[in-house]
Amino acid sequence: MFQYISNSPEATAELATKLAAVIKPGTIICLEGDLGAGKTLFVQNLAKALGIEENVTSPTFNLMNTYEGKMVMYHFDLYRLEQEYELEDIGFYDYISDGDGLVVIEWADKFCDCLPDDYILLDIQRAEDVENQRILSFSLRGEALEDVYKEMEKLCQF
Image (cartoon, rainbow, N blue to C red; front, side, top):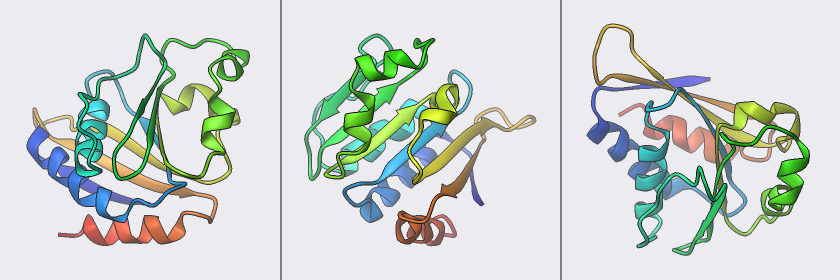
């Protein structure tokens, strides 16, 4: 695990932009954190850096949005889902096994047992004593994305 301390929304956006450079097709990033922690801000800037021109919003009501850029990005928001069978209904398993694009899953912790074997977990938490500060904790699950994870770690040490 490694961490990055962001002191502003702009710093979080800048980090997402830098990390986009090491994303490869088949990367899955699972995002955790409270409402308003900065998950969608991170995804928006990741998307922008991947050449996605559309306005990226949290797909809370759509559950999943697809965006085209340098690679396709599938953006899931599992916040409103309650049952595992609902993942099947939205084609979740098909998209996470696609391998041709980037999959970003907000509120992934709601369905830990349904996640693939290989992904990068990004947990964004508010710092207790500094208003706009966020602690971004990255951890690797499985081995398939180890090269992407290591490159992300290098970029977080600037």
